[in-house]
Amino acid sequence: MSLNVPASTADYLSRSACEIEEALLTALPIKWQIPEQLREAMMYSLQAGGKRLRPILVLAAAEAVKNSRSARDSAMPVACAIEMIHTYSLIHDDLPAMDNDDYRRGKLTNHKVYGEAMAILAGDGLLTHAFYAVTQTVKQGVPPQVALDIVSDLAKLAGASGMVGGQAADILGEQGVTSLEQLEYIHLHKTSDLIMFSVTAGARVGEASNDQLLALQEFAIKLGLAFQIQDDILDLIGDEVKLGKPVQSDVQQQKVTYPFLIGLKESQALVERLTAEAKQALMKAHLAKPEKLYAIADYLMNRDH
Ligand code: GRG
Image (cartoon, rainbow, N blue to C red; front, side, top):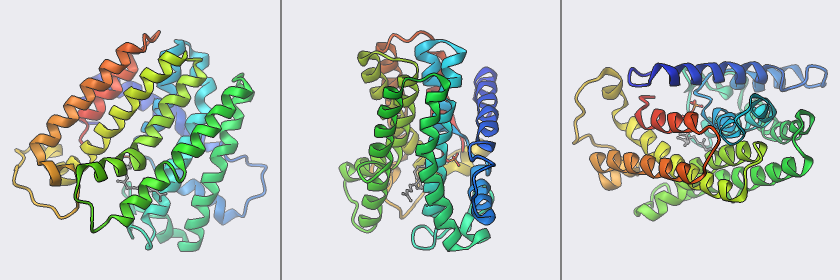
């Protein structure tokens, strides 16, 4: 964890990540008959670490709206579901047909360990299982209509009109992205939509009012964009930030990103502005216990990985 993260936030994030990792261990029922290698490939990537940002947002949003431990517990199956979707997207993104990466989170990518066919199937298995996981919230006391709304949000925000659509736009525009509008479309869908899902789903479990949902969705859009622009910045100057070295503002890169289109300094200013706007939206939601959501917004702006 970076030095500029307050200890209380670092503690909250690591405790939440541990709880999520524990829940993920049993998310794929042991008694289900699944070919051993497929189960192993699914669990390999699910257990490979990562920040667990999206599931943490699910839990934090539920807790922020309801201010109760039980809302957080009821939201856990949805938290697992979004991590399964995120993990499947990373497995598929790393495949030779897409980014062709050998390493992810410091470990060999799924297809490097299990082969391409099994990696595709592990991704498919996680994607499908995520919908099963959402249904398990009903066993935690979430009303079936709320679970249905969450399923419908998930299909929309992770599918062709959401993350998959954003990835397609990214691939189709690989050589031709020249405008901020095009880049914003890609970011909004490829990255923000899962963040939007996470905050909305947590809020639904916490029984948010319509006004609260709208304010939290505004928070999520701003947060998602800020997160992706910060990701672009870290791609460019991550090593300097981690080592606390002065950043060279003339760093060159080929990929079309915010720093490429509007410059590094302007991108950093935009992350700050979007984070401030996200926090203003949060204020409008009049939540019972919003502190952790504010802390997450600050953490994302200041993160170094
Ligand atoms: C293959 C359908 C499909 C989609 C792929 C996730 C994705 C879409 C592509 C990966 C490349 C990328 C940079 C996407 C933007 C979203 C993003 C920053 C992903 C990484 O998320 P983190 O930083 O990762 O939360 P960890 O490892 O911490 O979970």
